[in-house]
Amino acid sequence: MTASTDHVRPRRSLLFVPALRPDRYWKALDSGADIVCIDMEDAVALDRKDEGRTLTLPLFAQSSHPHVERMVRINALSTYHGLKDLQALIDCESPPPSIMIPKIRSAEEIQLIDTLLSTGPARAIRYCVIIETNRGLERAIEIAQASPRIDSMILGAVDMSADLRCVKAWEPLLYARSRLVHAAASAGIDLLDVPFLNLDDPEGLAHEANACAQLGFTGKASIHPNQLAAIHAAFSPSEATVAKARKVCQAFEESTSGLVVVDSELIELPVVRSYYRVLAIAERIAAARGTT
Image (cartoon, rainbow, N blue to C red; front, side, top):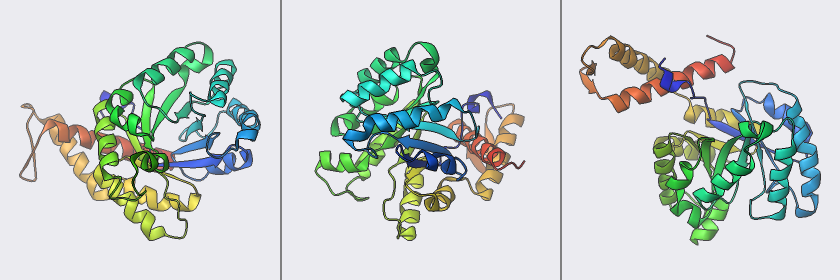
């Protein structure tokens, strides 16, 4: 494994938990999801935002499940409760390791949050940025590179489709998804797709997850643990891919010329780097399962 893959971790799945149901948080941590996100924004009515915040932040005083990325979806920076969320994070002695930031429209908004969360324990908070507006889509590359604290981006398809005046379906949103793939790849961060909301259509979920994986997404969000198996199947490297990656990386390490030929195929350096990422993901998945 090369040093360049030290930061790589599986972000195949993200499971949302409503802030008003903290009991579900502990169950979600045991679900097998790579990321568990407590939602203080869309999942909480306006008149219960303070209650959601009060129930959520104390949960992170306990450190557990090291293989699960723990996250909180805060309210938008442009709202009263978004500002209260940020103040609570600044004051929190044990803040969440990561926050999901909605309604981001510019790199400057991320940089402002960086400044606000620059002291105390809040300095360690990482970011997942939601791109869900036309303006955010236009500036996605700048946003993705706005802070070294950004680990991932996620498509917010409901608001995005409304802003773009299109149907929330695969074909109308293909351009938006492709643009986010470009932005995330440019920044070297992960990219997750919107949850599939129909719990009674597992075939539709599998189809959409596989299409996203082929497009360049690294994972997909979910609203129920029953969706995780299909998502993991789409975004986990296959045994054949892992075997090919080991073969290519070994050949690269043994090469003295920088040129790698495997199975009569010339492998260039960008492809080698992608295979190192495959190995890193596979090893971390195995570690999370408690295997070797």
